[in-house]
Length: 468
Image 1 (spheres, rainbow, N blue to C red):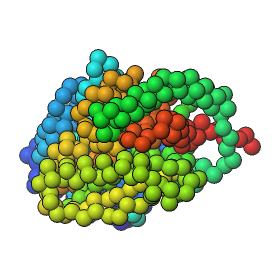
Image 2 (cartoon, one colour):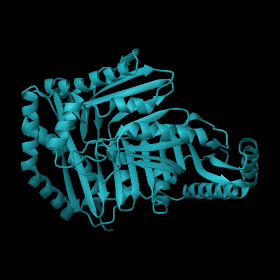
Image 3 (cartoon, helix red, strand yellow):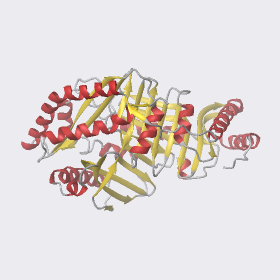
Image 4 (cartoon, rainbow, N blue to C red):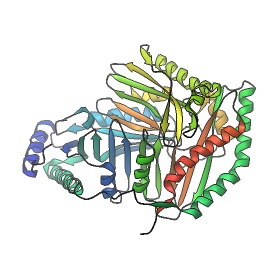
């Protein structure tokens, strides 16, 4: 895009396209290329203006910020993947693009957040089974390219002009923000000790019940009732300070490379955020990639030890074999598997295997239905492990370890698992972390793994700037 583009010419082009494609009213989408921007800087600019926002930033691949809802659906019942598929089809069928796409990455996108499970066994969950949103405003970034997109329902040229003027105003704000120095997150920082103490106390007091739960998981595996189960702990502490979400994201970007930083901000009092190491799958036609991530070690440890650990290799192989079976269910037989390796994500490293395939087309929601929940976050056999999770854990998982991602108008898609994060809700912060139990698991080591995962995200949040 050319910085010399002016509003008069832009209006003329969009109106001309409207005359050709729209009778008088309809759901329209307008896109304009913008200079390359820092997503965090732009997020900081608009985060308090809109009640809803979502953030997705990868080191490699598509990143975006979404603001406000153009079309949306929430579901509190079953058949969430079917409802998501219907919502996706209906909205992309009705959405009329009034500008030419300069790149596949710039395509319209619908964003999704699912709950971990539809079964709560009388445990109430305060998050929907499905949230699907066609954002009103979407800022997309890939490498050195950026686009700004706006979606809206228009009734004639008067409301269309209002929509065009809105995207133009946002465009100018974004361009002008580039000249401002981004606030440095490199300032000296220190831990907010009272809150850290609250966290450590909560962690310690939860250990007795956690040990009972994990020990029961070990028994289920030893008796052959399950081959693997992933059991989690949740800690909830008071946090009356202002949540400086952008500063947290800056720290996560710096200290947790190779992750996807994510936010789902329902409103100022309910925010899910984190830095996920685990991509469930990505599909950019014709390339489909699945990721097996299981087996954990601290970055301070010897990686060779992880590669030779029978327990961790067994845990990892359950995930890999499950993903391959899911491909076979989807009638995808031609695939390649990478060598198993250790990949680092912040303070923690995992065993990782990538599975590649080339397919002409695939329904992302059918794939999600088959893949989730995988043995990486649930267990094996899946249904039995899920029942035991609902029995043993004292809380509904909600969005913990749930699929979050996007699908574009061409059918490309990407979904991660919402782990290694937290939920800010009503002046509290909830942390959830789990570990995979297989034959050979040792109680103390599983407890230590959960603590390691808690600490990796906690220390990115409870930090305050030292006064000058």
